[in-house]
Length: 269
Figure (spheres, one colour):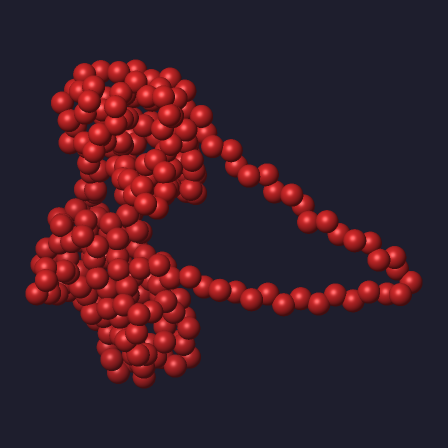
């Protein structure tokens, strides 16, 4: 679920009649040019089973519910896991909400009739903490990984359970293993050394570790898109393209440094 905050900025200026009225010109911002990735190598291969290894080594937490008598307010949150994350769901998973570094509510998984996995959290607080920042922490026992999501709504006592408080937690959001991610848009040239098919694949690698799987939505945008996950800013991702028609993998020679923003790369095989 995407949440956006709209900020209105009001400003005023004053001018002196003795001062000349000098017009101002807004500075021109140069648009970032697409990266040109030139050159590749080819090796015959069966269709690869590329996937991201999400397993980590985080220790299981021992979060505890706070004493209700300490707080005079509470709010409710409903957090559902996306399909990829719930594939690793187990009864040993746990989720909690923190305010000012203190645990304010703990929940264990609920498996719904349609197979979805959700957590219902009763968050404790005081009236003085209204609009305080909240942090969601989720531990996956199967992955041995802690996810820390800071993109949470503020603390609102006695809230209504509306859409603003019904959230979706995705696999890559708040990952402690891969804290950096960037969206990469990849455009193929008109002239290709192969005939594209629906069985083609595209992936991003850092070293020999798969960090992103490509997907297509031609009704929305051209080419491919990948969410590339990294351990730090500036890690260099190398693209690999599997051609079903050629029966092999093209490894693009030039790499892309992942900076956390949307980047466009044009491949020239």
